[in-house]
Image (cartoon, rainbow, N blue to C red; front, side):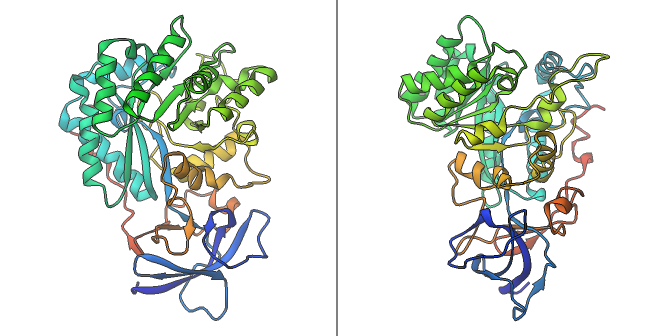
Length: 427
């Protein structure tokens, strides 16, 4: 394409259009508006109502989205399933197999798997992601150092944030303080897995104390189970309020909220709102692990109460979580797949409302990259063009023929070949 060109007859979700004086009176029942987009150099120059007078690439009502944000991943565990499968498919076995797999982790091996995941994510249209990194049982937190290397190598293509991942009891040990210092040194986020135990209040308070002392944001795995008495999310919110924590907090999973009585749900949502906590749901992984019993068909879907949380005024996003590892044996780092499955699993259609923001604008806000996740006049032209014209078409096929525009130019979306990992993965 030339330095200056038009994309015409593009269907764009109205909720994702920003910074244009044009009023779009006509929209589909799914909230799509028909637009022409002028791109000059790297930037979006104009967004106007579709016009017969516009000359350019005719998208024939194909949907155009801003690039995705995937804010909860596990790049350092990715793509080990062939080597360390979870044959029972449950959470306990996943944890055991993932920790056992650490015997194979070397600097080069972890680097190659993480880089492979980034290649997939980029080809599918992501522009930013956040990864949780295992930080116990491994020498000198090697995943953190590899993240910093990859962050630099990918800086012109992907923004990559990282969160420490340990169980919260780890922070009551001297190694926990060492980890907090490491994350502060590397400009990362402090995080861990919150689960109910006799010391949970002390553990949560300690994490907040370490974060406040080092001016770190927080990102928790919370209540990843179907236990009615698992209220870590509530406890995290109460601690944030009591300690007057001013940083950014994200909590992932929060599955137990779905099995708790209405009065507990109401109290939790009110506390989470007061504490200004954002929620990220991981439907594919939770569907895979939760309620798994041998020879028994699962009864529930494993996801948290995304609709109620959003109705309560909270920011709710979806993300891919684990990919081809013991916690989730599938996945390809594709946020369109994540959104498609989220719509199906949590019934976000009829109407679709503004749920498309949950993989674009909302996660951008949640990880403090508010300039991303929307289509805005004056912003960089980072777009994904799909042939699907309506959500029913977009979410019915895998859209493997999507076109990716970065910095105003079409880029290669070829996925990496699995053979790249053969020397590291013993099949």
